[in-house]
Image (tube, rainbow, N blue to C red; front, side, top):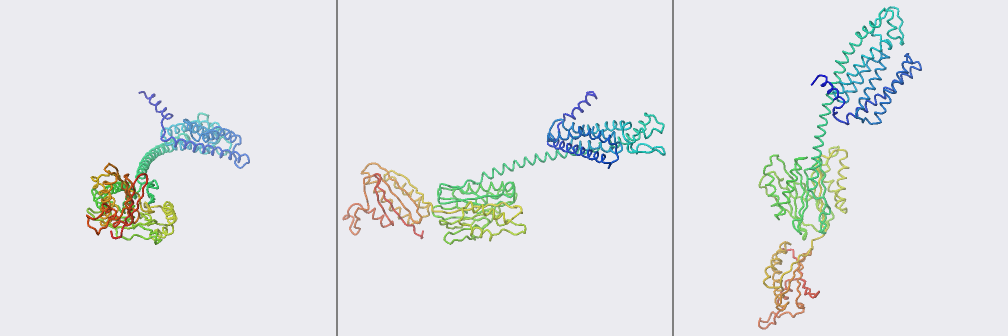
Length: 624
């Protein structure tokens, strides 16, 4: 490649080269446009002050310079601002106009304008483009030579140029040729003398100090801007990933409330506010089966992404283990051992986990080093901390045993769980929000909905903290127990004595699931066996038929409903057998209903839709 062609390519790249950032060039154009407009108004003010006689400068020269600057400074500057710095070649137009304007002033006022030609190259460095700065430097160096030459013939005197003859009278309007006409120098000698004595030193200073420095500044600025761009892109990537992580974390936590609209016996609401983009706190609520609700709250040591990862792992482990229907203490025993495996970060998790029986209101729970929950007892009308001794945190030591505790929820009772981000919220005076403020707030807001209570508590914490930043995750969960689950369980069987074992097994499963005492289970087994066998033998008169049993736990009693489509028969109307007579002397039948009356608290019969319906009630005693 020829030297000329290489030079042409390099020269072309000045105009076509890609800038570091489009936004930077546009901003630099706005800066240059603003400066050009300011220079114009400075020139205009000098002209006006010259007219009023404050400055002793040739009025014709100043008028000429001011009129020129309208086209070389004001109009291009206004166009640059109007375009908001946008335009492929705008920076070239602005810098060239600025250079021409300053050169024009310099060629006339050589004694005042020497340093003005530094302005274009200084502003060029603001574009952070090395090639563009070199281009402007070359342009202004060329302009410097031109205006120096023109200044000799048309410019006013620069006293640094020549040594004048003794007795020469100097005025501000004296030009160089007039000042040196008595020196007996011709024009070529004057040009040679002044150019060597003035232009070359200025050129040396300009090239090796000003231009070189500006090129270095532009290159440093470019490197800085590139690094800033890289950091910005890296920051944007990290922020995008954190937003994704936040979304994943939020999607993992239940966020639809009411959480279990099909269960009218409970209401529950929870909220987690992370201190950073992602948090280490979590809560969870899920049904193990139709009658058992699991709730948990936890706080992972540390903050940010590492804590969030452990949070997701521990939440998954607790839920999956609990769904296998282990007891609460077994759940934490197994989860703890799994979390201890490979815990090289020495992280740990404080957690509270409970399983509520929706039919009885009994809750079994464990506490692994977590904050004590608060319970509101509707009958006492006050809220208090549950002061059980907590066990060791999760992921601290293998084979840790966890103690199972119990509490009884009655309709209207509330249970409030939280993490230490609530009580350890700190204001500007280094005071903690604390347990007392939390208890007082909840006591004063028991009549509010769960949503209002938790959102109101967050506002109360914010008001207490004031301008201090949140330094820890804040998580809250509140459960309201509204009523016992009286949902019926029912199942149909063939009215055949071969199904007896299946009927009794179904009865036993329901009674055991509702924690009915063994004594009552035995009594009900005996009654149902007798009544079922009677239906099989007599209701359908030897034909096939169906039998339906419905079971319901209604607060303090078990209600059993038996249905068949056999012949109409009200066993309560049948005369009870005389048990004092011998078996041979008694009438057939009646023993089943007699057995039922002795073991049950109430029996009712009705005939509906051609069905015999027998309703049996058994009060559940406290001595289970």
